[in-house]
Image 1 (tube, helix red, strand yellow):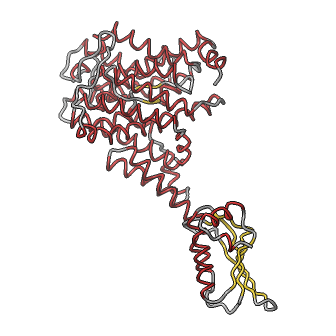
Image 2 (spheres, rainbow, N blue to C red; image 1 turned 60 degrees about the vertical axis):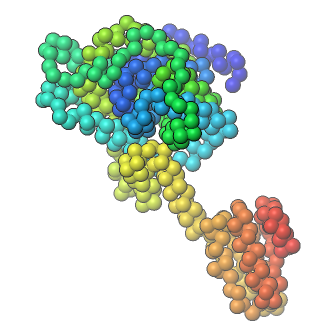
Length: 485
């Protein structure tokens, strides 16, 4: 990226980007507070995180116009750590997650996200939707009827108001109306202040108050790595969506390192790790926010609102957050994927379902993605393996058998050639023609050598013809380049 391009991303259409960022802040507040209680931390932890991430990633990120904050996917990973060891361990995990993300970007490993197929992405978002909804269930148990009534009203506002106007985000109206009702008619319901103390000033620099021992890092590292991977996955998926919507390209490597730096800053200022937020990002784009200034404004305006309106935010009923999170879970889930189960190939549907199942059973989004990618790789290898074909011809005049290999030879398909070769053949000369084949790895090259060795022990003359440059190199590395003709 050139300096001129970077400056343009800050200065292009400043008024439009500032206004879009301000609207994005209103869409950010309710979900960040809701995600904070999903993670089991005070609202201030999520709100400070969103403020710091927005400011930092506006400067260091690689995708202008993308809103980042304390997102639900990372909150779900963090919840178990907070429940078992407390906030201070989460702050250390946030610092380590940021370090992992910087390393990920510096090593250019963001290209590995290309191995996350559409089926795995669908399974990821479906599992995220299920987990977000399940996290609301405890807030709907052992409560008075007033809570259910407020949740129903909140859902009605969230879903019906956009049919009338989209000038103001419906989640914000939901919060205003339900809070106004509880002010006018006091009722026995939980409010945000019951979840923890809200910030009333600027965040301050802090270090995790934990023993820096091997035992501590043994506890924290698995969560930190999972938070880093889930955060990167959601951020890069969101960046790809923005690329498609704006017909522009983003710097994915810069986004990785920028997110890592931002999360380190978050951890140092007492927040929890975050990532790209697709709902808020799409809303920002809808209102014209395509530059870095919109992301910066979303964070700066968030802090201003918290300092000025923290007493009001403290009285927001939890029922309003539950209604918003139910909406988020429903909109996150890909309902069309249910129809695709019968239309798509069985292997693709299996990958999607396996991703969902692993995430729901383990509450680990990273584990689900890893399982989906592994299954997808296995199924792909199986499909490619079936494309390998071997045919043969026999020349009586030369007493020669020629095997023609067609397709991709690698570790999974190497046995196909071995199964096709007749080691009892009476031909004195065996030729293996690789004109229409590609040898991809040592396993395939080694399989060729073993076939040749078995034939030679039976007195055959063996040669390999039309091998490409890669096959020659692999056979030479095994010391069997004498087989080449």
